[in-house]
Amino acid sequence: MFYFLLWKVVAVIVPPIKNIEKKKKEYKEAKNILSLICNQMGSSNSFYSYPLFEAVRQDTYEVVDEILFRSPSTFKYKDEEGHNIVQLAVINRSEKVYNLIRHIIEHTESYRTMTDSSENNLVHLAGRLAPANVLGRTTGAALQLQRELLWRAEIVKLMLPPELTKQNTLEETPATVFTREHHDLMKEGENWMKTTAESCSITAALIVTVVFAAAITVPGGSNQESGIPVFKKETAFTIFALSNAFSLFTAATSLLLFLSILTARFSERDFLVSLPTRLVFGLLTLFLSTTAMMIAFGAILFLVFCDQRPWMLAPICALACLPISVIVTVKFPLLVDLIQSTYFPVFGKQSYLDSCKVSRKNTIFTE
Image (cartoon, rainbow, N blue to C red; front, side, top):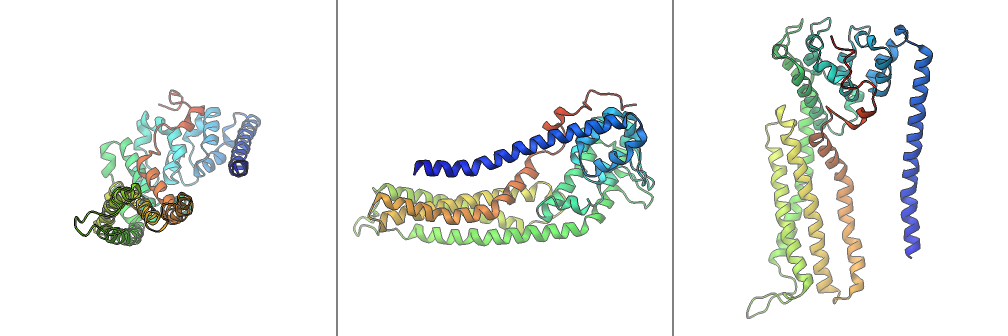
């Protein structure tokens, strides 16, 4: 049985490891091919413009890094619409390319004050709605709006104060552009957040009802004279009491968090931190309450109906894992997305920039 289980574990682990090694090998070969192509193209800037712009749109920072290292003057090139790679990175939400060239924008004032043909500065461009393929990378309208707000907040950090209220040719400020462009996404985000909170609050309310009923109905009954539970000295009864109380408190907390989402005002600023944080803690407490409820039910099932036979623990634990695995499978990916989007910064120094040739100490692009 041990070797059978070991073989099953190996069969599950080995294929992903081989797949990772294969992807690393393909990535290394692709970088070698990129270097060979650039060697063949030489230093002629005319050949680099289209690949550079397409790489920025696709957020392929490796290609941008290689081209900028070989031909620094391409940094100032503009596409057919008059946008350079800084503006294209903001418009297309190419965060990896933006992180690669962020230090250049910081140390060059002309890039922070530049405008396009419609007098749109970088904050105006950050206020535009991201392309559909970029929005599709993020789960849920609320998280999509949060990512858009993060982009605007990042660009605002780099801009001079007068640029934040500057008007374009349509006499629109950056704030006006953002509100107009994201009006529909705001409505979708509000509906998505309410729907998610409602579905989770129903589950939390059911758990509260079940564990409260179990708490006031003592399993096995009580002593007629003293009122002390019959199974008071049993370990399984102690486990039941603790896990049932923990489940009740966490479920009630989860329910209150979800209700606070339903009664929120849903302003733009709320989608940045407040609402995602409530949803994160609501889901966490919901997972904990579900797990504690199953532990409490398993403990009392073992105590009352299994006559304390140890071999009955295995089927009880297996069946108790079913509802836990279901709720984790359904909601855990959403929780991971929420935590990554809210608490893990996507801008600034990133690990993938360590291997880039265009270093932060390079000054060949500055004025």
